[in-house]
Length: 299
Image (cartoon, rainbow, N blue to C red; front, side, top):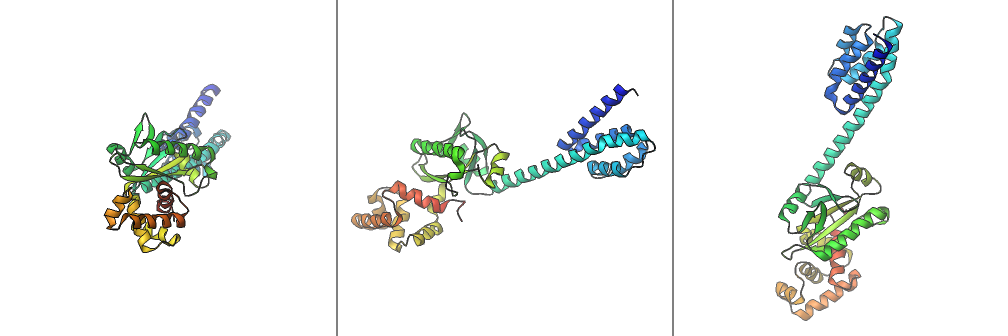
């Protein structure tokens, strides 16, 4: 074999070794070609290398192989570092795939609809609940690939929150930003925008080229346990808590009064006290404050 042929064979073999890092099933061919390239005691090397984990076995075989001449030892030296590096790349990729799969499985287990979006608000991943909500198209859509809320006012706030998450994610409240919105039928919802640009969240975002996660759950305003937590935090009375819960389900004071069987002036009194205790002045602010306590990410 000429030096040119030898160099071409080595170049092709190194390429095959790195290809095997991306596709493990290619190790079998790479091992056989490495055995032929070494050519000292090729049969023994091939038998040792073709174990259950060919790449790892090849690295071991190259390390302990007793070459019969200087040329075989030289060729082993040319391959060894590439094999070790390829195995390292493969292990990193394997861990990344496991992490990404585990992350996707965890998102699919959530009852909330979860959407990962890039800096332009374009959808890059949705969990199972999120895909179902997209199919219903009564809360959120992915028009031209961009995640948008049906409610125009809510959508404007959502897009602003995504821009903020990208621009200064580290400065955004770690619980995320709550965006009150409505379904097409009038049902209240809250979209939580969580930045993925800092801390441990960065890795999850990097896997999907995402800058933010958007959580939406239709039932988010109907969780009594969360209302109880909120009520304790702001020292609300039982009556004020009931008015608060009702105000999250219907908007007008007259509707709240009808729902609870309480006179409208009494409802207004309770609402004023709730606003005072929670540091809010209107219903939209109150919803946003409550939503923070109901975030699927809040402890």
